[in-house]
Amino acid sequence: MFFSRLLRIVASKKKGWCVMFGALEFGDDFDLICKAINVLRTGGANQEFWEAIAEAEAFARKIVDFAKESANNQVFDLMIDYDRSLDEMVEAGRYDDVEKGITKSHFPIKGSGQHAVSAVPFHPNFGRKGEITLKGVTTEIRNRNYRPGRIEELLALGENHPDLQNRFPIVATGSIWRNRRDGVRRVPGLWNGHFSGAGRCLFLSTITRGWGEQYRFLAVCN
Image 1 (tube, rainbow, N blue to C red):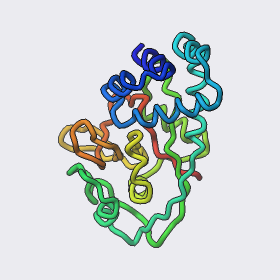
Image 2 (tube, rainbow, N blue to C red):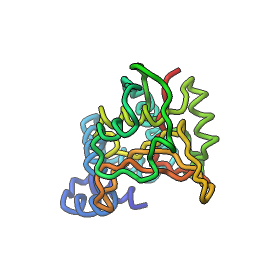
Image 3 (cartoon, rainbow, N blue to C red):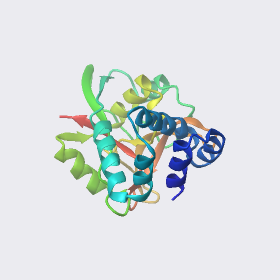
């Protein structure tokens, strides 16, 4: 409901209220939302359009599905240098915060030389509950003729496209570490910890019941 109110505010060009409410609710993503709204406005979005978005869930979902499909077609060409150690890959990314569990013993890297890959920050179908499990996202990735991305590919993405993780969290489910102490499985991810002031983070995401709709999953073309 808040998003519907925000759309109405932006559509009516009440910029003062828009900035105040948007900054509180969406943080760093608010600029991106405003850019998207301006594109729609340039394309001819009028009052009837905004009312339809605010009131018609089916119409809104069609637009979201179209945007998600466009995002899933955004391919990043990466060069993986297997002659570098995990520590060197992490250092090259210049992250503001790195979780302690990301070590070469937890995430061993196998390979040598340089290999080119094409990767996508995949956004799957989260269903009515708004979340997806490891099994679910793996199935969707493989159905697209991709494979789950690994930590070395995630680090190459973070190094060469450092601003991408400011938009959404990206996890690499092709690299899984099980903590012997608690038995919990974790995967590496990129995110911006703007709420804690941590900046660009290389973190560990716990595999529990599932991930929310804000997540992207690194998928590599076969």
